[in-house]
Length: 420
Ligand SMILES: [Zn+2]
Image 1 (cartoon, protein in one colour):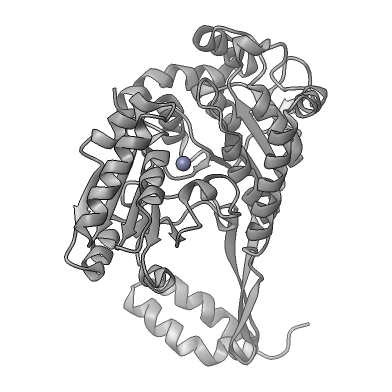
Image 2 (tube, rainbow, N blue to C red; image 1 turned 60 degrees about the horizontal axis):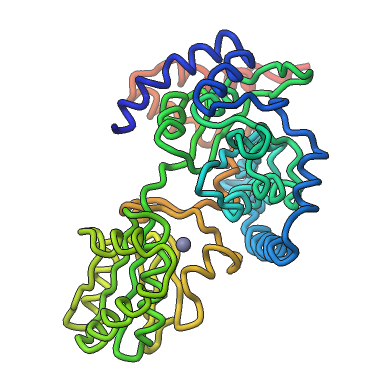
């Protein structure tokens, strides 16, 4: 099934929620997730309890991940700039946060509190007005979303969390619903976060009602390495990204046949002792994964730019210099001590990155995702009068004479003398 097929299947869900609201949300949840949560909105006490119940090491790690991500994303905040185009004529670019954001967090087997952090922190640092998290109700947890997700929300200061997943969650965020327990989930302006094919289909179907983030494909790592790279580092990084998904791509590009052989051998050795061996073996033996031999690093760089990896590691002599020459990549990890799994959790960088070659035209999630640049245009009479002949010439050229007339009306005003 592809997203277009899924879109057909979720249309009735969207229609029901648009017309019936929360009762349809709960009915579809019961049908698809097999459970009706105690309340749609998770009480804040439940969020706090789950944070209290966290393993202390996981709690400390989440807090460190949040703190580092905040440090980086706080620096991404843009300041407004005013350009004096001519005396009396200015354009100010104002960066205004999106008013209300919804974040989808998957449930089921793939429980990633790190994804909650990577979506929530940039939204918060952008200064969005409000933020709601949705995550599927879990039968194993009394109908609430996964405890680790709830705990991460609490640590991030997110208080508005709903026990709803799938297309019904996206529809609820898009239209807003009155809650059966009282209160209301207001409609959001933008929905971000990963989800299964039905979530993706719902986001596509509702685009226009809401803004959406780009669709994430299977994860990718490319390692550009020369003879100075440690084959154990390279092999373990290829394996670590292959661990995400049988469709994950792990590609080594090297100019050193000897390194290629040694990495191959290390992969085989490390596979024997890793947990998710079947998934990783399938990912590494798929056509999306490979070891690519190149003539030299120049050619390797060309391969990396053509591929535009979600994650690109540079494990070479003068790694930083090569890294700064990269044109196309979601994120670049430089040298032996910046592996991609550091970036997944605790580098401070964002791990929501463009896949499938879209790094050629797109960036990862950032504060910018949650801001809109708005031009504030200010001209005084003299500045308008000075440029008027040009506006009139262009409105004539485009055969839009009323445009010219709107300018002329102001010039005539001035000519007819002072107004009270
Ligand atoms: Zn990873």
